[in-house]
Each structure stands twice: as structure tokens, then as C-alpha cells.
Image (cartoon, one colour):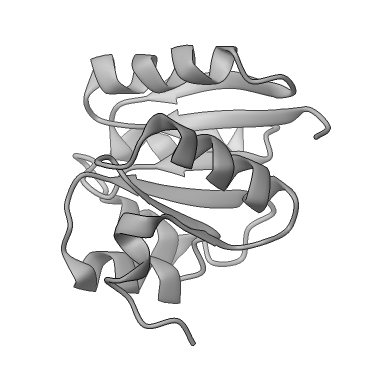
Length: 136
């Protein structure tokens, strides 16, 4: 895997930094920013050079789903990473073009698998999410 520059958008700071710590051990993955508020996400995205956004659905200020709605024409991949298991939220994220969907209840390896798949050009649904949505 070539180097992937990643932004994490997660409102729980300890979770965001935990993800960053997890990814620090993955060769070729570099976390360049960790955003905790959706209202600042668009400005960070527009001023950064990166390949992948790990996006929580439940961000304050602007939800992850609202962000996806306004950034459907983008040059970076998105993995939606959420602890909410509302099938409708995951379905909407999928329909809005999120390349990966991972539950916070999945083992850490699922996020790494999602990153590998998505940066390789594939879509990825974790086992906990795959049964919640209809793939079209």
C-alpha cells in the first residue's frame, strides 16, 4: 500500500486519538489531522492534502451525513465509522457514496481492512454493517 494521508473526524477526542494510535502502527498510513467538530471539518478538508477521511456520523455542528451530502463530488475516499447502529444512517451513508462503512463495535482489524480496501479502490462493509444495509 502506498502512503495514505488520513484525516479523522470523531467528536470523542479519546476515540479519535485511539484511532490515530492504532493507525500509527500501520505501514503507509499517516494521520495528518484529528477533527472533533463537524462545523470545522469543511475548512480542514479544503485546506489539506489527503486521501482518506474517517468520518463519524454523529459530529456536532455538522453531522457526518450532512458532510457527505455537501461533498459528493470529492477527490478523497470516506470511511464512515459510527457507534450508532441505525440501519437508515448506514444506508444513507452508503447511498451518499461512502466507500467504507465500519461499526465502532467491530474489532480494530476491521478498520484497517476497510482502509486497505478503500485505498485500493474497493468499497468495504464490515460484518456488523453488511447485514444492516441493502447494497445496490
